[in-house]
Length: 309
Image (spheres, rainbow, N blue to C red):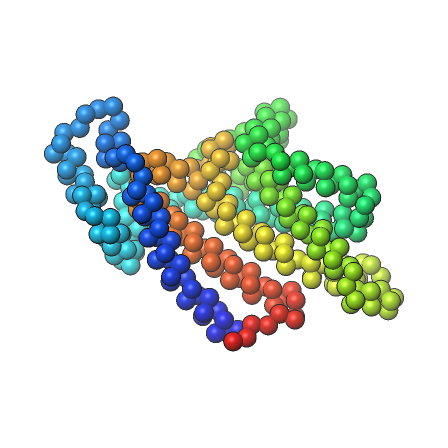
């Protein structure tokens, strides 16, 4: 087990350098001049432009800029935005907000998927099962911005159950509405995975043996069926968690959530290489660690899984 964990952690090293190099190159290759964009419609002094280029090493070749960035990373410095803010401070301010939102959304998705997916599997082909499958298809087909506007209009404006926007006050309670929207948008796939996994498990020999021994359903389903059916749902939820950390841009924009999505979108528009690469680097590391935890959970859920050399 320990050797497996060490191997997985060592995999972070090439992923780190590959991701940072690729993302930095993509930002470097974007058309336009980020320094001129800072001044908008104004015509800046050429001396000021030259000074800013030298300050941010934009007058250097791509590979030299990249090495400057990597050197800063190993010193604990993620760089400086073109507005003069430390990327460390920006990340420390926005990541907890998006992290809370992602955790709440995954919790909603995971809970609904397990409950509804299991009940649908146990009632396969009946009214409840067919209804839930239709609802899941609706959530799959519904664009996230449409679902966000519908939830904002009905749940917040018309019925007053939630705040329509988040803003600077972004405690756990203020994030419920965007978390519900994200959770529902992800729930459909997880629910169908859970339903299929439970149906497949119900047809296994050990489940038939448990029933033949006289064990009641309330014992067989939680102990023998659910435990062996959770692996695909956990895998999907772990993937969704990584997606939410960086991909909740639309939802954060609609609900005015001061999180990573909005910040990253603005950084891409301004060609702020250090900001974009630093954010993506942190997400890559978090994503790898989350998947490592999920891999280790497999062994707890299914005793047949062992980590060997």
